[in-house]
Image 1: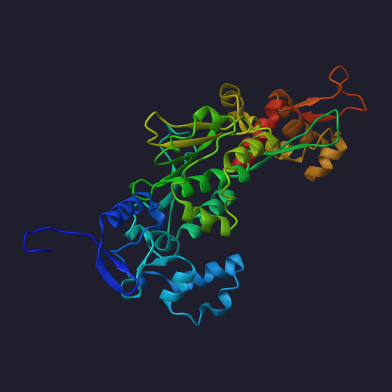
Image 2: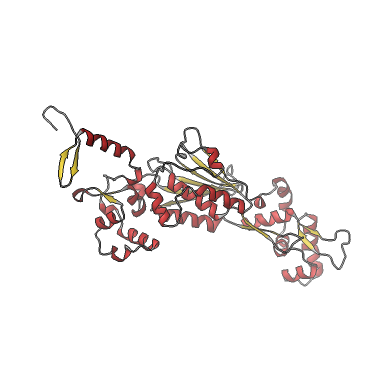
Amino acid sequence: MSKKGDWAYYLRKHTSTVKASVQDERELLSLAATVPFDDRYRQSADLSDLSPYLMRDFLHDIGSELLAEARELDIETLGRRMNVVGGPSEMAFPKNVGLLFFNEQPEGFFPATQIDVVYFPDGAGGDHFEEKIFKGPLGRITRDALGYINRNYLKEGVTKHADRPQAERFWNFPLAAIEEAVVNAVYHRSYEIREPIEIRIDGQELVVLSFPGPDRSIRLQDLQAGKAVCRRYRNRRIGEFLKELDLTEGRSTGVPKILRVMKANASPEPIFETDDDRSYFVIRLPVHEGFLVDTAAVAEVTPEVTPEMLRLLGALEGEMGRVDLMAALGLQDEKHFREHYQQNAIQQGLIEMTIPDKPRSRLQKYRLTVLGQRVLAIKNMH
């Protein structure tokens, strides 16, 4: 500061601190304006905020040769080798990306750095919901949230066809599509906005919400068609670390993969939403139609579905005769089977005869109806 009260920019040149020239100022301002948030220094943190244990775990997970010498390196040297530390040696700072991946509580520096998984068993308008919040290093919470969803909310359905032996198998939501949607949110959300990533699940869809929306260079119609190519990346460094963990390819392949995986599962097309201001981004993955239920029909039938009938639905594979069905259920009393299993299920429209005109035919077999398949799918989901 001069006696006249003027101020100036200073910078490091080699080992000296010098006053910046006009040209230097322009370059500095230009660089400051273009350095992505995740690659900036965090001057409110110090190197002790980086965990060498998390850094070594990451190197182990990706099979890096740097792991062999990591234990012998101090945190600054290791951080510089991994490009998560910057600045001169006398004033080194962790970068934002380093704190996001290698600090046990990154939400202390970036509030709302978390993934919320919310399940609505009675639909979004119901009174009950289950919530699980994941906090911690980005790589860990991404994997943990996906694993939690996979274990608790993904179900496989089976449709059996009378005209062929092969059953049709499908998932309510294909895991690969969920992975791409969640990783996309982790990759492209802003860590300056105090809003978490939210994953909402009910019987109709799985929704991934993040803030803000996609870059303005991307047209929504191109995104829906799987033809969008991002020209600017909000968090290029975060993308690099996610790529190392095999969580993303980082080549604008996420949306096309979601479209491809949903189609392969015979699911409805995903829906991408944002507003004109690109203030948010929503990816909706509709549930497979095999898990949708005609609400009116099920409301009428479900109260009459007994445990015996549910056992029958679960045992019925393709087309089966009475003897085979009784054997599959472990029953020996034909009258008990007929009164408590077979006839009730037929009356409720859950199973049907293959030769309805000849009920007593020795060739008679039974198979699930569409309603029976749906009721069984509901049982499997719960």
